[in-house]
Each structure stands twice: as structure tokens, then as C-alpha cells.
Amino acid sequence: MEMTARLAHLDTKLDGRNCDGLVNHNGETTEIRVPLSHTGKRLSPIEGGNLYRLRDRKFLLEDKKRLCAWALGTALLGILLMVLHAELCPVVYQPGSIYAHSINGLISFSTGCLLILIIAFHYKDIRLFIIDHNQVDWRIAMTSNRVLGISLELIVCAIHPVAIYLRPDMGDRLGGKPEQNSSTPLCLSSSHKEVMLDVELLLSALMFLRLYLVHRAVLLHSKVLLSASYRSIGSLNNINFSFRFVLKVLMNKYPARTLLVFIMFFWLSAAWMLRLCERQKQVETGGMDTALWLIAITFLTVGYGDVSPHTSCGKLVCLFTGVMGVACTAMLVAVMTKKLALNKGEKHVHFFMMDIQISKRIRHAAADVLRECWLLHRTTQTKDNSGEHRHHQRCLLEAIRVFRHLRLKQRKLRDYASEMVDLSKMQMIMCDLSANWNSSYHELEQRIISMEQKLDELGRSFQSTSELLTQALHRRRLDHRYTVKNDFSKLYINR
Image 1 (cartoon, rainbow, N blue to C red):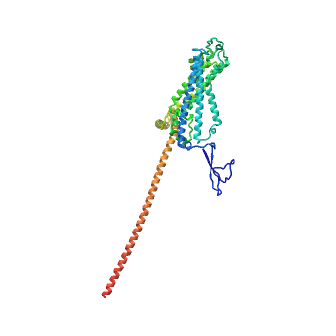
Image 2: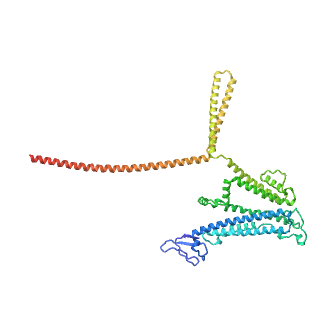
């Protein structure tokens, strides 16, 4: 890519080299081009063409989608193998057996494949950056944030249980049989220390961090990012197509489905992690059913207190579950509020019918006020029964209070009815009226212009008509003079 700049009064050299453009002696400015790529690199016409760039960009996006899908599948395969290994050992096979080594080898192999896929994905991303910025040097794309992000991804994806490689079973080393110890949470022998068990437990739980690839896969495979109309309109409105925008679109289109999938997956993952943490203590929360119950009541912020975690790892899992439960409850409340809210048509019908009902009640209340006034006036005129007089006074005050209350209720209802939806509708009506007035004004202006043109034509016609009449009268006057002159000549000759 080349940056162009216009400089005034420049007549120097940079680093002993002439610039591409300089200022002439006449004071005219010339264009100076500064290439961002390496000076020794020459681009062929095929590489610099816009059509070829768009084609390469499309292929790179498809490769990124494919690599992201493969990376997510590999990450899920590693997590499933880790869960399978933790559940089967030492129940089905013992630590240090060929099955344990085989599954651990598969986990390590999937981890290596995942790291290769992550590196290939970022390689395609850097190539896409180079194409977007017109073949710049690839080292420009390697910013500190990008390098830090790639390093963190590689560290997160490289985490997997490695204790079996660090310290083999002492029983296998001595030729003895491994002990069947069901109290260990993972496939480790009794010779491993408690610190090694905690490290292995932590590495197994941290493998779930690989699920960050889900948001990347959702972003790259979403119809929002693949649709050209979405991208065009979004670029015009300065919209950044990130995972947050895609998640908002999904929550607006499929709120119940999205929340249900997330909540169920989170419950199962948190329950298994809690079971993995609690199996070490051989407590009741080490069972899957009890762990599911504890995660559910913690997620729903109920907390009956019948069961509780005993290990520090289990307490951290329950704490994180409670935080996520509060967040999901807030989202669920927002979704339900949006679903239960009246739309514009329903709101207008509801407010209109309530206004009619309140208007009827106001008329009845006004009639009650008039009736009590008449009854009070009649009892005042008779002056016979003071008790009846006080009764009608109380009834009149009550009727006035009801009337005022209904009027206040009607005013509040009309204030509630005047919402932004109605204001926007009123604005649209005013815009239509303004457009109609403008069209009527332009039509009237055109009519006035046409009338002026017709008046000009009439004026020219009158002028031509007056000229013709003048010529005709002048000719007739000449003819009359000629006849009179002939008559006088004839009379003169006769005399």
C-alpha cells in the first residue's frame, strides 16, 4: 500500500535517496509516494489487482472458517477424552495400564493437532491482514496485542493432564501390581503425592478453557457475517461485526433457544467439574446426581443448604456457578419482559378501551355530583332534618373525591399512552404532511410559472394585434385620402 501526500516547497533528499516527487521551481506541488512494503519487493500486476485480492480474501475467509471448525472439533475431542479417562479409570482399567497410556497419548496428540490448527488459523489471519492492507510487510501485522493473544491461545490450548508423563507409577516401575484406590479423583496411583493430584485436577478442569473457540466458530459461521447486505449496511453505519453483535442478534431472534442451550451445557459442565473435585473426599457431592442438584440450586440462587461442597475446588465451582446464575437470571427476566410486553397495536387497543371505560365512569361521577348537589340544596331549603343534611354533605364530598380521582387516573393514562412509539408515529405523520405541503407548493409554483408564461404570450399576442390594427388603420386612412383626392380632382375637372 502507498500513502500519498502533497508537500509545498520541498527540495531535499531523504537518506541520500531522491523522493518519488519533488516541488518544481515554479512552486507547483507534486505527489510523493511512500511504500509501506519492502523496497526490494516488486509486486506483479496479478498480486496488485483488486479482483485477485477479493478472490484471495474470499479463499482466506473460507480457510479460516474451516480451520476454526477443525480446531473446535479437536478441542471438544480432547475434552471428551479427558472426561472419558477420568470416568473409566480406575473403575474399568488401572493406572499405568496400556489403556491409560493410550488415552493419555490421544489427549496429547489432539492437543498437538489443536496447536497446529491454531497456528495455521493465525497464519491465515495475518495473510488476510496483508491483503486488506495491499501487500504490506507481514511484520507490521505482528503487534504486541496480536502476539500476546496468540501466546495466550497457545498456552490455553496446550493445557492437558501430564502427570502420567512426569511421574510414572511406582508399582509399575518395581514390577508390582498397581493398587486399586478409588479415592483418587484421576487415573493416578497411590504413590502420587497430594500436590500432584491437585495439579492434575487443575489441568483437567482448565481444559474447559478451550471452549473459547465456540465464540470464534459462531462468529465465522454466522449468517450475519456471511451476508453481503449485512456487511454493507453495517459498514455504512460503523457497526463492528464482533461476537457481541452476533450474540445480540441471536438473543433477539432465538432468545429462549440460546439461553436453554447455554444453561444446560453450563449445568452439565459445572456438575462434572464439581464431581471431579469432590470425588477426592469420598463425600455425597462426589456423585453426579448430587452434583447436578447442588449446581442447579446454586445456579438458581436458592441454596437449601442440604448439601455443600467440601473442597476448595468445589467451592470455587459453586461460586462461579452462582455468579453465572445471577447473570442468566437477569437475561431471562429481560427476555420474558420483552415477550410479555404489548406491541404497538395491542397497546393502542388497550389504552383506547381503558380511556373509554374511564370516560364512562367520569360521566357517572359527574352525574352523582350533580344529584348530591340537588339533594343537598333541597334539604337546605326545607331545614327540617339536620341528619339528612349532613348525610347529603358527606355524599357530595365523596362524589367530588371520586370525580377528581377518575380525572387524575384519566390524565395518567393519557400520559402513559403518549410514549415514544406514538411520538415517532406523530413525527412520521408530520413528515408526510410536510412532504405533501412541499409538493403542493412546488405544484403551485409550477402553475404560477405557467400562468406567467401564458400572460407573456397573451401580451405578445395583444402587441402583435395592435400592430396589425395600426397597419390596417394606416392603410385605410391612406385609401380614404386617395379616394377623397380623386373625388376633389373629378369635381375640379367637371367645373
